[in-house]
Length: 413
Image (tube, rainbow, N blue to C red; front, side, top):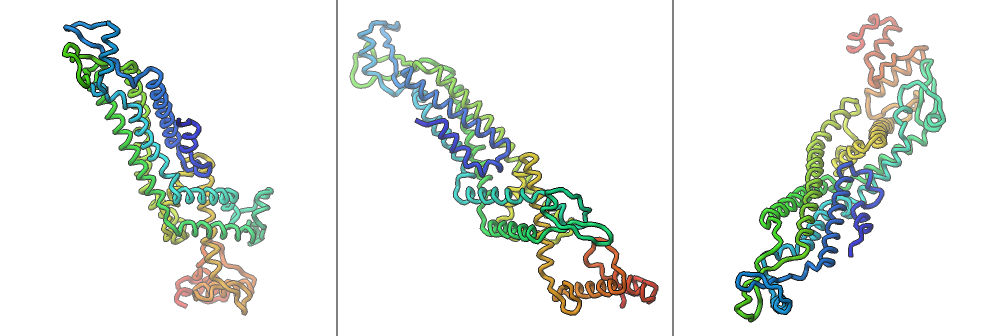
């Protein structure tokens, strides 16, 4: 016999994938549990009320006979082919339909590829969550001293102001997490595609359950007695009989209950499909937002599992305040990773004793001009742009009295 606890564990999956289940998934779980309880009660009712035994009532000369010996004889010859045979098998059919819906519901979290992918993503997001405030520790923001920020950052003075700079160990941690994320996304687990297939199975399956139950209720019209055939050789007097099922009203009620829960599943699946339609544009909007932040090409955009990454990120964001914090932290960590990877292109210049890009002439010139200004007791204006070579040259020429600091002249030179 099926156990509610066992089925509940099968539906829920591991605790590592529950953060990726939005509210409609939880309600689908409850609806499936409701169908299971109704089916189990139906099977129990079949056993307790003797539904599997057809009661035949012999008709003698157009009137019903109550003679027990005659009734016993006719019932011994009663065939299982009668108008209400569907009711006999409905509890078992309902159990099969439930298993189909259950399979469609758990396919996205029980397939080995998607299950392991979600577990890895959960662990990664949990590690990213530990760096919740990492975006505040990088770049030109004033220092706000508290224990958490002191753990993450060092203070440095620039232009008479204090700034927060990520500690080396924190930078290494960010790089390590993003590298793990890249390795995870190098394979394509197909979580998004499996989720689409799951939604289609639930939509079609619940729709068929509702249609089948409604048609059955309309056709049988809550009938309690049905025409019945007798088997083998019997007296001509008893060829016409009527059969009934003791639990027929109970089984009709089971049809209604399963139809109600299936309707809930259908509505919730429509919400999931609407969510999938929304996610079609999320990836392009996400990449466009990334480009507007001047980070350039997204570091994960070429990975085969990038769609699954954005889908999981959107699911986490949908699941409340904690998911929103993880969403922001992951994005800020990716921005830090991109900046740190750019820094790795720079090497130590032996002449100037500073880090310059040996493979990018433009960056070398920028660093050289900035170094010359510092040697003369000056500094380039902090505009937030890392490639402001023209402004740097203009400041240098202005100090040297060349062209009065004309930017057009500096650009020509």
